[in-house]
Every structure is written in C-alpha cells, then in structure tokens.
Length: 375
Image 1 (cartoon, one colour):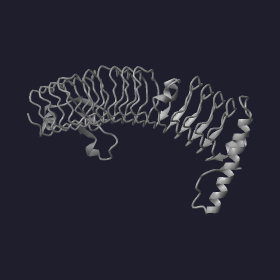
Image 2 (cartoon, rainbow, N blue to C red):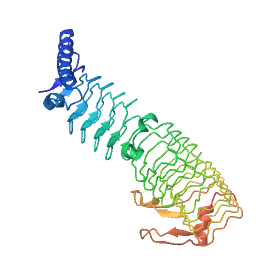
Image 3 (cartoon, rainbow, N blue to C red):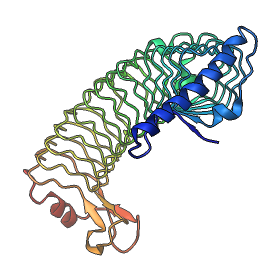
Image 4 (cartoon, rainbow, N blue to C red):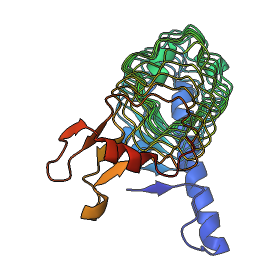
C-alpha cells in the first residue's frame, strides 16, 4: 500500500487532488491521534502505514518515546513535531520538513538526512553517532547540544556557509562538495578530512591542522592559510590564485594542476613542491626556491622567475594519458617569463622512449625549454 500526500503526479484533476488531500489528512490525522492519545508513554505507531506514507502531514505530532527505528520518511512535514527520546536509529529522512522538531534524547544512531530541512531542530542529549547527511543546511544553532563531528562526519554537499567551527575537532570528516564559504576553521583539526570539491571562498584556516587532508578540486579564493600544518595535504586541481599563503610552509606543497595564476610567492621556499600542470601565468616567483620541485607541463608564461633557484627540479614530465605520442613529454612553458639570474642547475627532463625515465637535461634541451623566455 502506498499513501501519497500533497504530491503532484502528472497533472491530476481537481477531483484527484481533493481525494489525495482527503486521504493524506485522514491517515495523518489518524496517526497523530493515535500517537497523541499515548501521552508520555511509548505510543503505538502503525509502522506499515508510516513506511508507505509519502508527503504526509505529521506536523506537531507527539511521538515521544516512539519506536520508529529503520523507517524511511520521504517528503513528509514534521514541522514542530515532538520526537524526544524516540528510537530512530537507522531511520532515513529524505526531503522532509524537520524544522523545529525536538530530537532531544532520541536515538539517532546511523540516521540519514538527505535534503532535509533541519532549521531550528534541537538535539540536546541525543545519540548522534554515525549520522549521515547530504545536501543539508547546517546552522550554528543546529550544532548546539550535539557533537559537531557526529553531524559533519559524513555531510557531503551540505551548506555550512558562515559557520563558526574554530578550534573544533573535525579530523577525518567528509564534506565533499560542501559549501564552506566564509567558515571560520581557525585552529580546527581537519587532519585526514575529505573536502574534495568543497567551496572554501573566504574561509579562515589560520592555525588549522590539515595534515593528510584531501582538498583536491576545491575553491580557495580569498582563503586564509596562515600558520597552519599541512604535511601530506592534497590540493590538486584547486583554485588557489587569490589565497593568502603568508606563514604557510610551502615545502612539499602538493597542488598539481592547480590555478595559481598571478599569485605572489616571491622569496618563498617551494622545495619538493608538486606543481605539474599548474597555471603559473604572470605569477611572481622571483627569488623563490624550487629545489627538486616538479614543474613539468606547468604554464609559467609571463611569470617572474628572476633569481629563482630551480636546482634539481623536473621541468618536463611524461603524460601517459595523451594518445598523441608527440606530446607525451610536456615541459614547463616559459614563454615571456623573466629568468634573469635564475638557477637551472641539474634540472631534469624525461626520455620519450621509457615511461617515467627522467634524467638530467642536456644544455640543448634546456635551451629549447628556455626558448621564448626573457633572459
């Protein structure tokens, strides 16, 4: 049996819409009445009806202490419902209106919130371990009375815009594709976190621990990275061209394929950095140290490398993904780059006949790489 409330199936006639509304009201009212009559005792809930009730009206229902574990609620209206101390472990809320619902003391272990509206919901004393969320708007008040790690441990595509999460222990959380615009993450522990594809425009990460974090494909426009720990962090394919790296230890910086266009990293130490295929057009890299760095296929046209030290750096890299054999070896593009006083001692290139076989570049190969640069 499927019960559909307040849902449009194609273009129903006025009579059909009236019938749907009546059925939804009768079933919702019956369920609410049964629950309300139970008072503070564990109410008797018809799990079969609820399981098959889509888009039903459960607003302001009193289901305190109810056994609702494992149920799937889809498109239902729970606005103002009282679910205190209810057993909801393993339940799923998909596209439901859960605004101002009281989850205090409830067992929410392993609950899934997908596209649900949790505005004003309370979780004081609730068991929230193992919660999974997707596409949920997370507010500061929502985190009151609950462990932020529990809600954010798996919150892909969630909206956390403007949240204050400074100093929080968020290690290992998953916020892939999340909106973290202007979020305060100062001194937060994000070690091992997975934030692939997240939007961190204007976020503050001063003093944060990003050790081993996965930050590939993120938008870091105007993000502040001052004085943080980022050993082993991955920034591949990210937008970093307006990020603030003051106080960031860039040695070993792992950001291949990233947008660093026009960035000012003069006199910085980028030894062992991975910047293969990155956009360094018009970047200020004067006096920078790129000892043993990886710069193959990077676009450094118009960049200022005056007095930079590229000793031991890899200027050409093997690109196995291209079917064009003539383009398997891709070197840094230094067209119109300023290289006066730049050190190119012991730089390497790769052989065309052996994959990943890189060796010291010959003087003729180096001259070919420097062709078009401003020496």
